[in-house]
Length: 297
Image: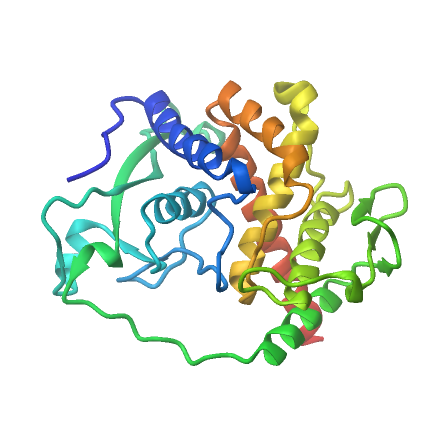
């Protein structure tokens, strides 16, 4: 069994957007979004057969599916892939929609004439199958996680200053301003240091969008919603990085101020979440590559 199968490219965008909007609205009371982890670090959704991490909006879609249905596993695969691994999707289980882009036959030989069409596919979580168990990773201590994230941030060479009343990226100074780490407290499953780093990774995602880095702009298409789109991009970018670095990602105190704007943007444009997730993926990969480059030198 699958989710409803979109019949057109527009329906692909609508199907995924509507599910994300519904999940965001469901968590509105406590400002907990599908990309927040409750009592442990989230796992980037990973294909159980290939071990490849899903990317962009598919990460958000699969986190939404897990959030809605209470799945704890981060492993997913298609019905056929589960069969290849000797597992069986249980009868009556419904798949979660993901998207892929299929290249159309070019209308000319020009390289810039490549065209793609959005197609829907469906995957099932490991919680929906029988006869399969993942290899569990070795546990990592809190101290090691903190040191890893500290080294990651330092390797980006972003200038971070402390002692401010609020966290923000100063585009005019190209600085990140942060409250002192000692001012942060832990939450459900997150330590004080993880709460600090989750906020810092949000601001670091903003930092990546500067004109001399990724030059992230949303143009006229989003108009007055461009600020909300940048905040949603930073929110998702931080979530991707938290999952990659093993940090529990709790709701930020300022989510209440942004939530209505995020919902309005998503409801007004069924491609907005795709754009935000794509830019967030780009930011996360840019920062990971930047950190890896400077750590090697």
